[in-house]
Image (cartoon, rainbow over all chains, first blue to last red; front, side, top):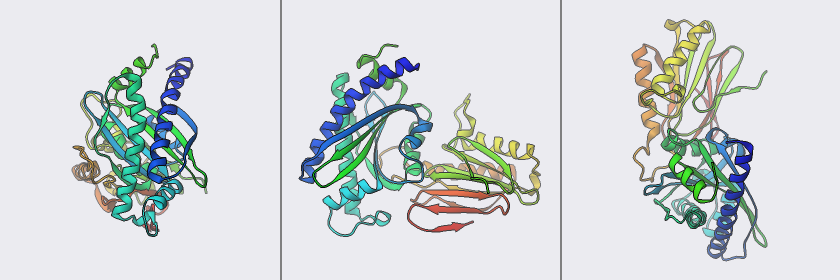
Length: 202
Length: 158
């Protein structure tokens, strides 16, 4: 991909990313029972090998919620909350003390749910732009080092995926702020379809 | 002391004392450490998947093709095969509730790596594998020790 093409593709990604982030903010506001807006959204399209770097390094602790799409278009979908944001979210959703090293079943379930809601709302934005239904399988959550969380997505898709669409969003409320990453790991066919239907010419 | 050299997924790094080599955030991936304690030469391979598909170019991502190449590179650096010992780290199952066929790819990686090492006649003298936690590992080439850290507990050495 040349720099000029990349610029065009990024513009398209930014469009769905902003819509997706807006959707996600509304949904999160409703489950957290608070006012919430999406503040800054930055996007990138990058090779798998550079994903960990863009997200801030393999060793940091994150909560990751991962699933894959069902159907003809194959893609992995991963939502990542950095440690502070994951704790902030749990604080508002679950009772009791929070220790990410030993999260309870309820907390794990809450993370899975909040991740699921976010990834679905980003997917809705993609789905509307390409006018194709995208249905994710039930996701699972893991809290660990970023590098370790990324391993399974890379292993399940590694042979067929080299390009990752990455979106970073800050959600801002009256008294809280947290951030999340939405990562789409499309197989080649899906990537081509998404970019073509969104209007990128190659 | 120099910074440790970082081995990314699908990469091999070979070096000698007093260097250090590290793998960050191993989840289902497995790090294979080969070490010649007399020459103090060692190498690390960071594998993603157990078996390479036919006609695959990116050999270093896979246990079967990657370990063979790691061995060649370590020998080329001056290690002797009869003195080599192996250590394994990683292969955790990060997501336990996913409905994906290769959900426990970590265990498959470990089995395949051990099998290849056994077939090559290299002893695996220590391991910290499988489980549910990610690990980072630093290989100290002056001692052959591997220091392992996890996200929420302290450091230990194998």
